[in-house]
Length: 532
Image (cartoon, rainbow, N blue to C red):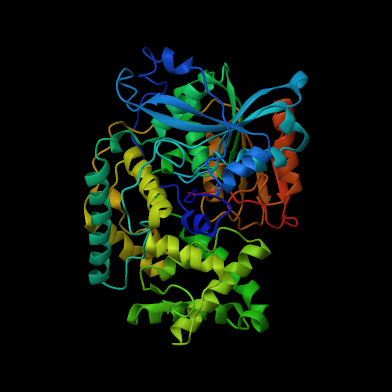
């Protein structure tokens, strides 16, 4: 699921774990607000321009190097009042070079929710290989994200997700923390919060489709982006061509409690990583067996319940992690089983162990960036956490009674003592205003190619198989044995990549489902969000 930001950054990796759970209530299928008053939006003339915003804009420079151009699309804030206030949605585009065989536009969403996608067309174009030249590849920063009209609630963190604590006093501290985050958003952005939803992002996508002059668009969505694609095809039937959903969310399980139900698969990923780290004890010193490495993490967490762990403070900024934040670091180290990602996670755990032992603990650059995102906030981190939460809270109502969360935390703690109090903990959505619209009841008759790893810790494989059963016209590409969130173009699995590219090239789904073995992942490939 997509909890995350720019897939190239450590902060994004830390923030990127969220999207899924709980039951939804019915809403109408096709969009009831799309009838009148939108012609001026769908037929607007776009002013394409350089994507570079300034000398330090690395994203813009990458886009320019890839031949992309950017534009701002005007959309209504409230689709029920198309003559009222407007906002802008930023898009980028690499135009098709094989114009004789052009297929159309491919719109991207790499998850979050709340992730920036304007910068994604270059790496997606590379992943598509020869078929990339047959599409206009379009990245879109969803409403209130990145280069679109922005939202920032002034949060002291990039993510609200926290571990509940050992006792009721700890849980109450987190409940107060979450209430404060919700109040900050209500105080600073009450006028727009009701309109920051997946259904409105889907409406924006359709305006973008019209402004691009396309009758139908193709779509590539990762993690939360899979849910967005499911909602779009339901609200706007007949306007989608080819659809690839990677890291698939089962719509009935989408809600603000998006992590509930991922406990077992995350614990499996943790055990796999611990076995990997044990084989490298000479390098990391975390234990010579899997159980010894897991014991190291348990000791770190026990120490964090007694006193804060101080990271940095020498030549770097000082950070303090407590019982509420150490499990977040652990959880977010589990969405990628590539050697590079596992080494980065092991380095972070080694630093935490040094702090738990009272020794000097200096973070490496990636860990420092992640801690900055989690513990200090800052403009980019606060904006990401604010809009991600606004989307989740605005889509589906969360339980309002803190006792519901405390009960679930206590119950999950029995079976999943480290992960359960994190995935079941209270969030700002418990203190949010009720959503204006009910969630979408997703249609089940659209052909799509779905991709999922069997050990995906964010969008578990069970969700992909459930969605595949619900969409009988779909095909499922399974990457067997990978503990990885986000596969196509990002994991280096030739089998999955070639299957997706063949579908994008021909428009024909595989005759049967495809199972791909794990192979050597590409080093340094960007990782989709999600997410969730």
